[in-house]
View: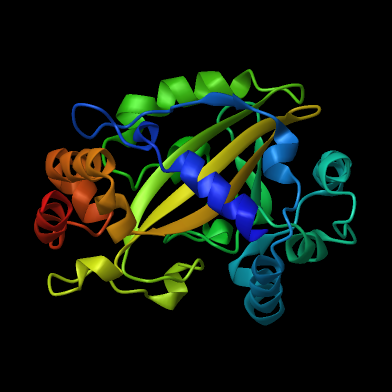
Length: 268
């Protein structure tokens, strides 16, 4: 991204709203968004270079083609926001459009149909294709029990006239945006220098694709943990979320072994 735009967006996302109040909990946290703010390119040549390198090298790990009718529906919307993006096929679009994108069926069970995700947080898009939205969230302990009914109800009502956003966060010891499972990025170790850990923020957007599809977009930002710690309120909220995170969730997020020393670092 244009560095000014990226820094402005990070400053906006790095707020108290990113973390749960009164301890960790799963939350949809939806708010309205102008779609062009998310889906238009913002001049990040480095992001596009990384996408092109990944898709030229191992495209099967990052993308899944769509049926012709689904592809045309996607292209029509993309042309509204980023007319310069190539649309010969899904690979050319993935190489020329900054956000990661997934197309879902709007009707239950909201099946994953295809898309292009170059910067996943420990998951693989091709592994999710053909599965329901409910099934894709099954590995996250407790998430479906809390959010599945709300998510299903929300996505079934999406249309192309309104766009919504939400955020998700994690912690990583790697600065790589691409955290596909095949890279086997190690978990944060108990001896890892906390100042070298990053807060990984996923900014997500959802909008309807006529007639019965959903477009799910993802942009990823890394923020050094020392920057979070420098803001006492934010550091305290993250520490509280880590301390109150249920054990199975901490295991899933690969934080069980390191969270005690990260909490100490944030609170020191």
